[in-house]
Amino acid sequence: MSPQILSSLITLGGLGLLFGAILAYASKIFYVKKDPRIEKINALLPQANCGGCGYPGCSNYAEAIINEGAPVTLCAPGGPDLVPQIAEILGVEAEATESMVAVVRCQGAKGVAKDKFKYEGIEDCNAAVLVQGGHKACVYGCLGFGSCVKACPFDAMAMLDNGLPTVFEDKCTGCGNCVEACPKGIMELIPRSQKVYLGCVNKDSGKEVRQVCSVGCIGCTLCAKPNITPSGKIKMQDNMPAIPPDWDDFEMAVKRCPTKSFVVRIPAEVAEEAAAPEANA
Image 1 (cartoon, rainbow, N blue to C red):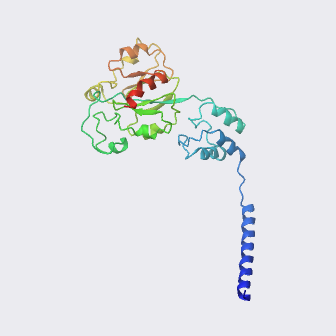
Image 2: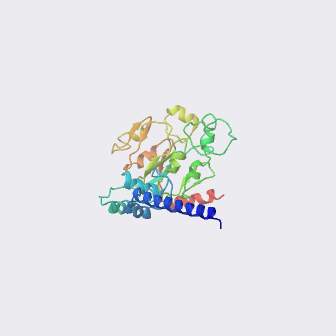
């Protein structure tokens, strides 16, 4: 080996050792110690990475809890039992939470709600809404292309033959992905303890609603009357009844509603069994 080559190898080797030492020293100087609580919290999270908490993934949410003080109640898939476990790691008192579930606030199925034209484009609600606001005559109604179903990471939804989505409550985690995916705003999260909800979001006058859908709320105010709801819990807001989660004396309102706009929730297993044949058809 010539002296020139040997000298070059020695020089390169020396530079490599020097730069390696500099990098090693820099890594120690600029090393940021990771809080061990982040890994503990991340281990408790369901690793669904659904984004329902507002962060890209479970590990990001765990870091946000420690580094940004994010609320410990944002993980819907983890359920209420997760909150006290995270609170224990943080050494704080657990906040009371109630599990949420998604509901479909539209009953405008095929043959029930009218269409204003035949849509033949991409079968996606967010694409269909770009064409004159959608093909439904009711500007608030479900477009029926299942964007909410596609957005659900837990297989907790399916499209029925009647053109409406259904929620399998035993699988729903309340992550809210379906709510964000719906361009019409008919998907909503409600407390699991809520027994009844309004299956309509149309705020138009009764006359306008009747022209486009036979089961839409017409704002008749009957359900808000004292003889129908003695508790007085129903108040009219934006031409619709505002339903509180703890509404218990709803039987007469549901029975007397002229358009049958209220939806009384049934056990999840019954809903899934009833929906399965249509969903798999």
